[in-house]
Image 1 (tube, helix red, strand yellow):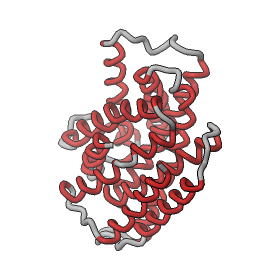
Image 2 (image 1 turned 90 degrees about the vertical axis):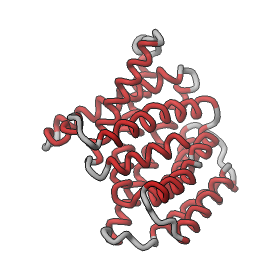
Image 3 (image 1 turned 180 degrees about the horizontal axis):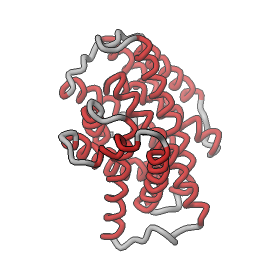
Image 4 (image 1 turned 135 degrees about the horizontal axis):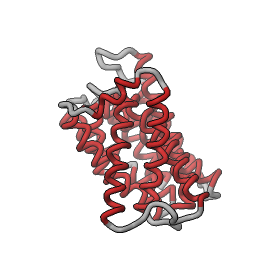
Length: 280
């Protein structure tokens, strides 16, 4: 959660000059190279280590929870800022628990349901915040809906992969998921118009002082820690503990991005975190 919070600050700065899809393409490409190098140095082969079905599940998880989810995440982050984005991200826990209930038969308790309601209430309170001067109310709502979509696809993608994660090496599984997301992003980048502008992100640029550290922290180190958490504990518990990043992001955003920490944000955060504690 701490590592991811620092990464979000770098991603917010990157988003000032890099489009969401291009930024995600850069992140996944660079992190795929890092994972490949790591696997090579450790002498661990990527292919031929599991049944084909496991590869397909992990790569599908990567497409949903990285290629799609992270693109929506950057679109939300660019529109509403790191603070409000962090509050929307508290939906991660409810989505994890809901999908785990339907897909993994994990038990759903009444206090978890109440916690989810409290989290949603906190997000509704945040959505009523006064938009920044350069943002309309419509843009604020659209941005937060993009964040909801990001959390839904993230939750579904990781719960889909959990049965495979429980019997797999963490680093290997993370690498395979990255390959799946990279294949999807490259395909889209080649098919859709405006290819030149998307690939321009790989030319050295002053934005790299934000995109490179953000990629290392958010798409490499934090991803390994996140997958490991999903492997070694229940999906619901891992989701809750990861969600403490909300606190760190709000603090860092107020320090480094000068985003105001208003009373409405405080109320929304308190409701969301209270909901997370109930769920826990």
